[in-house]
Image (cartoon, rainbow, N blue to C red; front, side):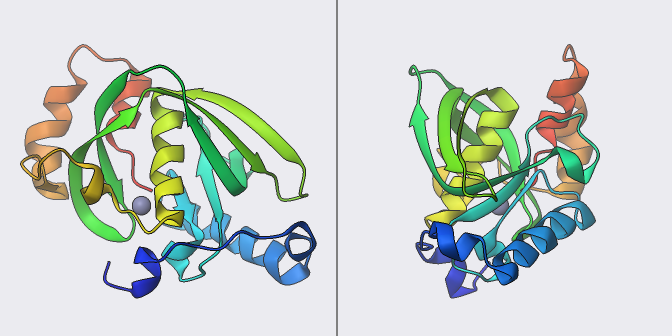
Length: 182
Ligand code: ZN
């Protein structure tokens, strides 16, 4: 946080550029970095490239790099009007968590790394990750989406006071959702 690229609007990647070796290598290194830092997602501006690219793990149980989904030039359409508040963290704002309202249901259209268009219908955890990452492409950080900063919490206090309480009565997927960092 504080690097100007994180507050800039990233530029789209055209199909020819996407096929270049340098861009493909960059995507591979983003996936590696996301895993190295245990993120649910990583957007190019977070590694100081102002390009509309992010990688994400949409299945909270996904483990391998083969489960990483690559999004180029994503466009989100919100479906319905339900908003859910959930805990988020960000690799660009280490060790801080806060409660962020997000649309519960979205559709996202993007290019994959082979420049082929795909569309996904996403809810809950996956919808939250994609909204968080797409915000990074527009220079928006999760603080900006919070209704108030009252829930802002250091990771240590989050683990001590909030994570366990929120896990009561919830299943495994929702426990993972509490830990979203991307
Ligand atoms: Zn982030």
